[in-house]
Image (cartoon, rainbow, N blue to C red):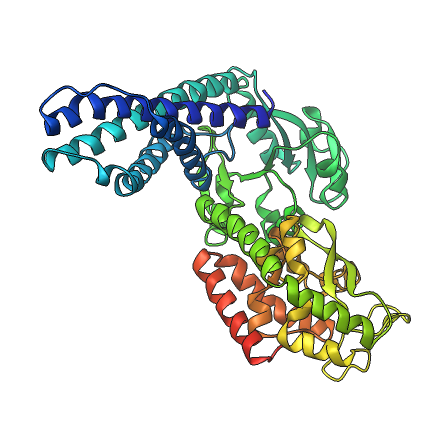
Length: 472
Protein backbone atom coordinates (compact mmCIF):
# COMPACT_ATOMS: atom_id res chain seq x y z
CA UNK A 1 0.00 0.00 0.00
CA UNK A 2 1.14 3.51 -0.82
CA UNK A 3 2.46 5.26 2.35
CA UNK A 4 -0.02 8.13 1.93
CA UNK A 5 -2.90 5.67 1.69
CA UNK A 6 -1.56 3.91 4.77
CA UNK A 7 -1.57 7.17 6.70
CA UNK A 8 -5.10 7.88 5.44
CA UNK A 9 -6.16 4.46 6.74
CA UNK A 10 -4.81 5.21 10.23
CA UNK A 11 -6.40 8.67 10.20
CA UNK A 12 -9.78 7.26 9.11
CA UNK A 13 -9.72 4.56 11.76
CA UNK A 14 -8.76 7.06 14.47
CA UNK A 15 -11.53 9.42 13.40
CA UNK A 16 -14.27 6.79 13.50
CA UNK A 17 -12.83 5.40 16.75
CA UNK A 18 -13.24 8.83 18.35
CA UNK A 19 -16.77 9.12 16.95
CA UNK A 20 -17.78 5.71 18.32
CA UNK A 21 -16.21 6.38 21.72
CA UNK A 22 -17.94 9.74 22.13
CA UNK A 23 -21.31 8.39 20.94
CA UNK A 24 -21.25 5.51 23.42
CA UNK A 25 -20.02 7.84 26.15
CA UNK A 26 -22.93 10.18 25.45
CA UNK A 27 -25.39 7.29 25.75
CA UNK A 28 -23.72 6.13 28.97
CA UNK A 29 -24.15 9.58 30.51
CA UNK A 30 -27.84 9.64 29.60
CA UNK A 31 -28.53 6.05 30.71
CA UNK A 32 -26.57 5.78 33.95
CA UNK A 33 -25.34 9.15 35.23
CA UNK A 34 -28.20 11.59 34.72
CA UNK A 35 -30.90 9.24 36.19
CA UNK A 36 -28.99 9.29 39.50
CA UNK A 37 -29.34 13.06 39.59
CA UNK A 38 -33.00 13.30 38.56
CA UNK A 39 -34.20 10.05 40.19
CA UNK A 40 -35.86 8.86 37.01
CA UNK A 41 -34.85 7.48 33.60
CA UNK A 42 -33.76 10.13 31.14
CA UNK A 43 -34.61 9.59 27.47
CA UNK A 44 -31.61 9.46 25.16
CA UNK A 45 -32.17 12.41 22.89
CA UNK A 46 -29.59 12.89 20.16
CA UNK A 47 -29.60 16.68 20.02
CA UNK A 48 -27.41 19.13 18.14
CA UNK A 49 -24.74 18.95 20.86
CA UNK A 50 -24.41 15.22 20.25
CA UNK A 51 -23.91 15.60 16.50
CA UNK A 52 -21.60 18.57 16.98
CA UNK A 53 -19.56 16.50 19.42
CA UNK A 54 -19.10 13.47 17.16
CA UNK A 55 -17.99 15.78 14.34
CA UNK A 56 -15.70 18.21 16.19
CA UNK A 57 -14.20 16.13 19.01
CA UNK A 58 -12.68 13.50 16.64
CA UNK A 59 -10.82 16.34 14.86
CA UNK A 60 -9.24 17.27 18.19
CA UNK A 61 -8.13 13.67 18.65
CA UNK A 62 -6.58 13.62 15.17
CA UNK A 63 -4.65 16.78 15.98
CA UNK A 64 -3.40 15.20 19.20
CA UNK A 65 -2.31 12.02 17.40
CA UNK A 66 -0.57 14.14 14.76
CA UNK A 67 1.30 16.14 17.38
CA UNK A 68 2.38 12.90 19.07
CA UNK A 69 4.07 11.85 15.80
CA UNK A 70 1.97 8.71 15.40
CA UNK A 71 1.42 9.19 11.68
CA UNK A 72 5.15 9.25 10.91
CA UNK A 73 7.21 6.23 9.85
CA UNK A 74 4.10 4.07 9.50
CA UNK A 75 5.89 0.95 8.23
CA UNK A 76 8.26 0.65 11.18
CA UNK A 77 5.96 0.55 14.17
CA UNK A 78 6.64 -1.38 17.36
CA UNK A 79 3.39 -2.72 18.81
CA UNK A 80 4.71 -2.22 22.34
CA UNK A 81 5.64 1.42 21.68
CA UNK A 82 2.32 1.88 19.89
CA UNK A 83 0.49 0.60 22.98
CA UNK A 84 2.20 3.03 25.34
CA UNK A 85 1.92 5.97 22.92
CA UNK A 86 -1.81 5.35 22.48
CA UNK A 87 -2.17 5.03 26.25
CA UNK A 88 -0.39 8.33 26.98
CA UNK A 89 -2.21 10.27 24.23
CA UNK A 90 -5.57 8.90 25.40
CA UNK A 91 -4.77 9.92 28.96
CA UNK A 92 -3.87 13.45 27.85
CA UNK A 93 -6.88 13.83 25.56
CA UNK A 94 -9.43 12.50 28.05
CA UNK A 95 -8.01 14.80 30.73
CA UNK A 96 -8.47 17.80 28.45
CA UNK A 97 -12.04 16.73 27.60
CA UNK A 98 -12.78 16.20 31.28
CA UNK A 99 -11.95 19.79 32.18
CA UNK A 100 -13.51 21.30 29.05
CA UNK A 101 -16.73 19.29 28.87
CA UNK A 102 -17.34 16.68 31.57
CA UNK A 103 -16.67 18.93 34.56
CA UNK A 104 -19.84 20.89 33.70
CA UNK A 105 -22.03 17.76 33.72
CA UNK A 106 -25.01 17.46 36.01
CA UNK A 107 -24.07 14.80 38.58
CA UNK A 108 -25.45 13.30 41.80
CA UNK A 109 -22.11 12.71 43.57
CA UNK A 110 -18.46 13.38 42.86
CA UNK A 111 -17.99 9.64 42.30
CA UNK A 112 -19.80 10.15 39.02
CA UNK A 113 -16.81 12.19 37.82
CA UNK A 114 -14.56 9.17 38.31
CA UNK A 115 -17.04 6.98 36.46
CA UNK A 116 -17.30 9.43 33.56
CA UNK A 117 -13.55 9.84 33.29
CA UNK A 118 -12.90 6.09 33.48
CA UNK A 119 -15.58 5.14 30.97
CA UNK A 120 -14.44 7.74 28.42
CA UNK A 121 -10.82 6.66 28.85
CA UNK A 122 -11.63 2.97 28.35
CA UNK A 123 -13.88 3.59 25.35
CA UNK A 124 -11.42 5.92 23.65
CA UNK A 125 -8.43 3.68 24.28
CA UNK A 126 -10.18 0.47 23.21
CA UNK A 127 -11.67 1.84 19.99
CA UNK A 128 -8.38 3.55 19.06
CA UNK A 129 -5.86 0.87 19.95
CA UNK A 130 -7.67 -2.27 18.71
CA UNK A 131 -7.82 -1.18 15.02
CA UNK A 132 -4.23 0.08 15.24
CA UNK A 133 -3.08 -3.24 16.66
CA UNK A 134 -4.77 -5.13 13.83
CA UNK A 135 -3.36 -2.90 11.06
CA UNK A 136 0.15 -2.81 12.55
CA UNK A 137 0.17 -6.59 13.07
CA UNK A 138 -0.87 -7.14 9.46
CA UNK A 139 1.81 -4.71 8.27
CA UNK A 140 4.52 -6.41 10.35
CA UNK A 141 3.42 -9.80 9.04
CA UNK A 142 3.65 -8.54 5.46
CA UNK A 143 7.15 -7.21 6.15
CA UNK A 144 8.30 -10.48 7.74
CA UNK A 145 6.78 -12.51 4.90
CA UNK A 146 8.60 -10.41 2.32
CA UNK A 147 5.47 -8.84 0.81
CA UNK A 148 6.60 -5.39 1.94
CA UNK A 149 10.25 -4.48 1.58
CA UNK A 150 12.65 -1.56 1.89
CA UNK A 151 15.16 -0.80 -0.85
CA UNK A 152 18.54 -1.12 0.80
CA UNK A 153 22.12 -0.11 -0.03
CA UNK A 154 25.20 -1.36 1.83
CA UNK A 155 28.15 1.01 2.32
CA UNK A 156 31.14 -1.32 2.42
CA UNK A 157 32.56 -3.91 0.07
CA UNK A 158 34.86 -6.21 2.08
CA UNK A 159 34.33 -9.45 3.99
CA UNK A 160 32.60 -7.67 6.85
CA UNK A 161 30.02 -6.36 4.40
CA UNK A 162 29.64 -9.88 2.99
CA UNK A 163 29.05 -11.28 6.48
CA UNK A 164 26.37 -8.76 7.37
CA UNK A 165 24.70 -9.35 4.00
CA UNK A 166 24.63 -13.10 4.61
CA UNK A 167 23.20 -12.66 8.10
CA UNK A 168 20.42 -10.45 6.81
CA UNK A 169 19.67 -12.79 3.92
CA UNK A 170 19.47 -15.66 6.40
CA UNK A 171 16.24 -14.09 7.68
CA UNK A 172 14.70 -15.09 4.33
CA UNK A 173 13.17 -11.68 3.83
CA UNK A 174 11.82 -11.37 7.37
CA UNK A 175 13.89 -8.22 7.93
CA UNK A 176 12.20 -6.47 5.01
CA UNK A 177 15.43 -5.58 3.21
CA UNK A 178 15.47 -5.58 -0.59
CA UNK A 179 19.10 -5.07 -1.57
CA UNK A 180 19.74 -3.07 -4.73
CA UNK A 181 23.53 -2.93 -4.47
CA UNK A 182 26.50 -1.62 -2.51
CA UNK A 183 28.92 1.29 -2.40
CA UNK A 184 32.60 1.31 -1.54
CA UNK A 185 34.42 4.08 0.28
CA UNK A 186 36.96 4.31 -2.53
CA UNK A 187 37.00 2.92 -6.10
CA UNK A 188 37.76 -0.83 -5.98
CA UNK A 189 38.15 -3.72 -8.40
CA UNK A 190 36.52 -7.11 -7.82
CA UNK A 191 35.20 -6.38 -4.28
CA UNK A 192 34.13 -9.49 -2.29
CA UNK A 193 30.54 -8.29 -2.00
CA UNK A 194 30.40 -8.03 -5.79
CA UNK A 195 29.75 -11.78 -5.91
CA UNK A 196 26.37 -11.19 -4.28
CA UNK A 197 25.21 -7.67 -5.16
CA UNK A 198 25.62 -5.12 -7.96
CA UNK A 199 28.46 -2.66 -7.42
CA UNK A 200 27.04 0.89 -7.55
CA UNK A 201 30.38 2.69 -7.37
CA UNK A 202 32.36 4.72 -4.80
CA UNK A 203 30.57 6.77 -2.18
CA UNK A 204 31.75 10.10 -3.57
CA UNK A 205 29.96 9.44 -6.90
CA UNK A 206 26.79 7.99 -5.43
CA UNK A 207 24.53 11.05 -5.41
CA UNK A 208 22.59 9.69 -8.38
CA UNK A 209 21.82 6.52 -6.41
CA UNK A 210 20.05 8.45 -3.68
CA UNK A 211 18.34 10.98 -5.95
CA UNK A 212 17.28 8.64 -8.77
CA UNK A 213 13.86 7.29 -9.58
CA UNK A 214 14.20 4.33 -7.21
CA UNK A 215 13.97 5.55 -3.64
CA UNK A 216 16.51 4.16 -1.17
CA UNK A 217 14.87 3.38 2.17
CA UNK A 218 17.78 1.88 4.15
CA UNK A 219 21.54 2.41 4.22
CA UNK A 220 23.68 -0.05 6.15
CA UNK A 221 27.24 0.87 7.18
CA UNK A 222 29.44 -2.22 7.11
CA UNK A 223 33.03 -0.98 7.04
CA UNK A 224 36.28 -2.54 8.21
CA UNK A 225 38.27 -1.62 11.33
CA UNK A 226 40.82 0.28 9.25
CA UNK A 227 38.06 2.35 7.66
CA UNK A 228 36.57 3.59 10.95
CA UNK A 229 38.71 6.71 10.82
CA UNK A 230 36.69 7.76 7.79
CA UNK A 231 33.36 7.70 9.59
CA UNK A 232 33.24 11.52 9.49
CA UNK A 233 33.64 11.48 5.71
CA UNK A 234 30.91 8.83 5.40
CA UNK A 235 28.42 10.74 7.54
CA UNK A 236 29.15 13.95 5.63
CA UNK A 237 28.42 12.17 2.36
CA UNK A 238 25.18 10.68 3.69
CA UNK A 239 23.95 13.76 5.60
CA UNK A 240 21.34 14.61 3.01
CA UNK A 241 19.94 11.17 2.26
CA UNK A 242 16.35 10.72 3.31
CA UNK A 243 16.79 7.10 4.39
CA UNK A 244 17.24 5.15 7.61
CA UNK A 245 20.93 4.86 8.41
CA UNK A 246 22.07 1.75 10.29
CA UNK A 247 25.42 0.41 11.37
CA UNK A 248 26.98 -2.86 12.47
CA UNK A 249 27.38 -3.00 16.28
CA UNK A 250 31.18 -2.60 16.08
CA UNK A 251 30.70 1.05 15.10
CA UNK A 252 28.83 1.84 18.29
CA UNK A 253 31.95 3.05 20.12
CA UNK A 254 32.61 5.62 17.38
CA UNK A 255 29.05 6.79 16.95
CA UNK A 256 27.98 6.79 20.61
CA UNK A 257 27.43 10.26 21.94
CA UNK A 258 27.00 11.69 18.45
CA UNK A 259 23.81 9.92 17.44
CA UNK A 260 20.88 8.19 19.07
CA UNK A 261 20.42 4.49 18.49
CA UNK A 262 17.94 1.65 18.82
CA UNK A 263 17.48 -1.90 17.63
CA UNK A 264 15.53 -2.47 14.44
CA UNK A 265 13.37 -5.44 13.44
CA UNK A 266 15.44 -7.84 15.54
CA UNK A 267 18.41 -7.73 13.14
CA UNK A 268 22.03 -7.39 14.32
CA UNK A 269 22.13 -3.69 13.45
CA UNK A 270 22.00 -0.41 15.31
CA UNK A 271 19.77 2.32 13.90
CA UNK A 272 21.28 5.78 13.67
CA UNK A 273 18.27 8.04 13.95
CA UNK A 274 17.97 11.29 12.01
CA UNK A 275 15.51 12.70 14.54
CA UNK A 276 16.97 15.88 16.03
CA UNK A 277 13.91 16.56 18.19
CA UNK A 278 11.21 14.33 19.70
CA UNK A 279 8.44 13.77 17.13
CA UNK A 280 5.85 15.78 19.07
CA UNK A 281 8.21 18.74 19.43
CA UNK A 282 8.97 18.69 15.71
CA UNK A 283 5.25 18.74 14.92
CA UNK A 284 4.65 21.61 17.37
CA UNK A 285 7.61 23.49 15.86
CA UNK A 286 6.09 23.11 12.38
CA UNK A 287 2.62 24.18 13.55
CA UNK A 288 4.16 27.16 15.35
CA UNK A 289 6.03 28.12 12.15
CA UNK A 290 2.83 28.25 10.09
CA UNK A 291 0.74 29.93 12.78
CA UNK A 292 3.27 32.65 13.61
CA UNK A 293 4.13 33.27 9.94
CA UNK A 294 0.47 33.68 8.94
CA UNK A 295 -0.20 35.93 11.93
CA UNK A 296 2.86 38.11 11.33
CA UNK A 297 2.07 38.57 7.64
CA UNK A 298 -1.44 39.79 8.53
CA UNK A 299 -0.25 42.03 11.37
CA UNK A 300 2.52 43.61 9.30
CA UNK A 301 0.42 44.07 6.16
CA UNK A 302 -0.06 47.84 6.70
CA UNK A 303 3.65 48.21 7.53
CA UNK A 304 4.54 46.25 4.41
CA UNK A 305 2.53 48.71 2.32
CA UNK A 306 4.27 51.71 3.87
CA UNK A 307 7.75 50.19 3.48
CA UNK A 308 7.02 49.23 -0.13
CA UNK A 309 6.22 52.85 -0.97
CA UNK A 310 9.33 54.16 0.82
CA UNK A 311 11.63 51.62 -0.86
CA UNK A 312 10.15 52.42 -4.26
CA UNK A 313 10.46 56.20 -4.01
CA UNK A 314 13.92 56.32 -2.38
CA UNK A 315 15.80 54.23 -4.95
CA UNK A 316 15.05 52.72 -8.36
CA UNK A 317 14.37 49.02 -8.51
CA UNK A 318 11.87 46.44 -7.24
CA UNK A 319 10.42 46.45 -3.72
CA UNK A 320 11.31 42.83 -3.06
CA UNK A 321 14.66 41.15 -3.44
CA UNK A 322 14.46 37.50 -4.55
CA UNK A 323 17.59 35.37 -4.48
CA UNK A 324 18.25 31.64 -4.72
CA UNK A 325 19.50 30.08 -1.49
CA UNK A 326 20.36 26.54 -0.40
CA UNK A 327 17.68 24.97 1.77
CA UNK A 328 17.14 21.74 3.64
CA UNK A 329 18.87 18.70 2.11
CA UNK A 330 20.61 21.04 -0.33
CA UNK A 331 17.39 21.89 -2.17
CA UNK A 332 17.47 25.42 -3.63
CA UNK A 333 14.64 27.90 -3.02
CA UNK A 334 14.00 31.58 -3.68
CA UNK A 335 14.45 33.71 -0.55
CA UNK A 336 12.20 36.79 -0.42
CA UNK A 337 13.28 39.97 1.38
CA UNK A 338 12.72 43.70 1.13
CA UNK A 339 15.38 45.19 -1.13
CA UNK A 340 18.03 46.97 0.98
CA UNK A 341 20.68 47.58 -1.71
CA UNK A 342 20.84 49.67 -4.82
CA UNK A 343 19.95 47.91 -8.04
CA UNK A 344 22.79 45.96 -9.70
CA UNK A 345 24.68 45.82 -6.39
CA UNK A 346 26.32 42.56 -7.50
CA UNK A 347 27.08 43.42 -11.09
CA UNK A 348 30.70 42.43 -10.44
CA UNK A 349 29.77 39.08 -8.92
CA UNK A 350 28.53 37.69 -5.57
CA UNK A 351 29.75 39.69 -2.57
CA UNK A 352 28.74 39.74 1.08
CA UNK A 353 27.78 43.03 2.68
CA UNK A 354 29.78 44.80 5.39
CA UNK A 355 28.94 47.32 8.11
CA UNK A 356 29.80 50.35 5.92
CA UNK A 357 28.76 48.84 2.60
CA UNK A 358 28.04 51.73 0.16
CA UNK A 359 25.68 49.46 -1.79
CA UNK A 360 23.11 49.61 1.04
CA UNK A 361 20.40 52.25 0.67
CA UNK A 362 19.54 54.61 3.58
CA UNK A 363 16.19 52.90 4.17
CA UNK A 364 18.00 49.61 3.73
CA UNK A 365 20.25 50.36 6.72
CA UNK A 366 17.21 51.00 8.87
CA UNK A 367 15.51 47.82 7.67
CA UNK A 368 18.60 45.77 8.45
CA UNK A 369 19.06 47.24 11.93
CA UNK A 370 15.45 46.44 12.82
CA UNK A 371 15.38 43.17 10.83
CA UNK A 372 12.31 44.45 9.01
CA UNK A 373 13.91 43.50 5.70
CA UNK A 374 13.18 39.89 6.65
CA UNK A 375 9.41 40.30 7.05
CA UNK A 376 8.82 38.71 3.60
CA UNK A 377 10.72 35.65 4.88
CA UNK A 378 7.42 34.65 6.50
CA UNK A 379 6.20 33.84 2.98
CA UNK A 380 9.03 31.31 2.70
CA UNK A 381 7.93 29.84 6.05
CA UNK A 382 4.35 29.42 4.82
CA UNK A 383 5.69 27.72 1.68
CA UNK A 384 7.51 25.21 3.90
CA UNK A 385 10.95 26.32 2.71
CA UNK A 386 12.04 27.93 5.98
CA UNK A 387 11.38 27.80 9.70
CA UNK A 388 11.23 30.56 12.29
CA UNK A 389 14.45 29.24 13.85
CA UNK A 390 17.25 27.52 11.96
CA UNK A 391 20.62 28.26 10.37
CA UNK A 392 20.47 31.21 7.99
CA UNK A 393 20.37 30.09 4.34
CA UNK A 394 23.35 30.94 2.16
CA UNK A 395 24.00 31.06 -1.56
CA UNK A 396 25.52 28.04 -3.26
CA UNK A 397 28.46 30.21 -4.32
CA UNK A 398 29.49 30.65 -0.68
CA UNK A 399 28.32 27.21 0.50
CA UNK A 400 30.76 25.57 -1.93
CA UNK A 401 33.63 27.67 -0.54
CA UNK A 402 32.71 26.82 3.05
CA UNK A 403 32.49 23.10 2.30
CA UNK A 404 36.01 23.11 0.90
CA UNK A 405 37.35 24.34 4.25
CA UNK A 406 34.76 22.94 6.68
CA UNK A 407 33.04 19.83 5.25
CA UNK A 408 30.94 19.41 8.40
CA UNK A 409 29.05 22.57 7.39
CA UNK A 410 26.90 20.17 5.38
CA UNK A 411 25.17 19.09 8.60
CA UNK A 412 23.45 22.48 8.82
CA UNK A 413 21.32 21.31 5.92
CA UNK A 414 19.70 18.63 8.08
CA UNK A 415 17.12 21.22 9.11
CA UNK A 416 15.15 23.95 7.41
CA UNK A 417 16.96 27.30 7.30
CA UNK A 418 15.47 29.92 9.60
CA UNK A 419 14.53 33.58 9.76
CA UNK A 420 16.71 33.74 12.85
CA UNK A 421 19.31 31.40 14.33
CA UNK A 422 21.59 30.87 17.29
CA UNK A 423 24.51 31.90 15.08
CA UNK A 424 22.63 35.06 14.11
CA UNK A 425 21.92 35.90 17.76
CA UNK A 426 25.40 35.15 19.12
CA UNK A 427 27.51 36.15 16.14
CA UNK A 428 25.45 38.29 13.78
CA UNK A 429 25.84 38.69 10.02
CA UNK A 430 28.99 37.30 8.43
CA UNK A 431 30.98 39.56 6.12
CA UNK A 432 33.23 36.86 4.64
CA UNK A 433 33.66 33.10 4.41
CA UNK A 434 35.89 32.99 7.49
CA UNK A 435 33.16 34.60 9.57
CA UNK A 436 30.59 32.22 8.08
CA UNK A 437 32.69 29.31 9.33
CA UNK A 438 33.02 30.92 12.77
CA UNK A 439 29.24 31.46 12.95
CA UNK A 440 28.67 27.87 11.86
CA UNK A 441 29.91 26.62 15.25
CA UNK A 442 26.92 28.23 16.98
CA UNK A 443 24.48 26.73 14.47
CA UNK A 444 26.00 23.26 14.91
CA UNK A 445 25.51 23.62 18.67
CA UNK A 446 21.88 24.54 17.98
CA UNK A 447 21.32 21.42 15.86
CA UNK A 448 22.81 19.19 18.55
CA UNK A 449 20.52 20.75 21.18
CA UNK A 450 17.32 21.42 19.23
CA UNK A 451 14.20 21.78 21.35
CA UNK A 452 11.16 24.02 21.63
CA UNK A 453 12.76 25.67 24.66
CA UNK A 454 15.87 26.59 22.66
CA UNK A 455 13.72 27.91 19.79
CA UNK A 456 11.74 30.12 22.15
CA UNK A 457 14.96 31.37 23.73
CA UNK A 458 16.38 32.30 20.32
CA UNK A 459 13.13 34.03 19.32
CA UNK A 460 13.26 36.00 22.58
CA UNK A 461 16.83 37.17 21.90
CA UNK A 462 15.85 38.08 18.33
CA UNK A 463 12.90 40.14 19.56
CA UNK A 464 15.26 42.12 21.82
CA UNK A 465 17.57 42.74 18.85
CA UNK A 466 14.64 44.05 16.82
CA UNK A 467 13.39 46.32 19.61
CA UNK A 468 16.88 47.70 20.26
CA UNK A 469 17.59 48.11 16.53
CA UNK A 470 20.95 46.37 16.87
CA UNK A 471 20.77 44.25 13.75
CA UNK A 472 23.11 44.87 10.86
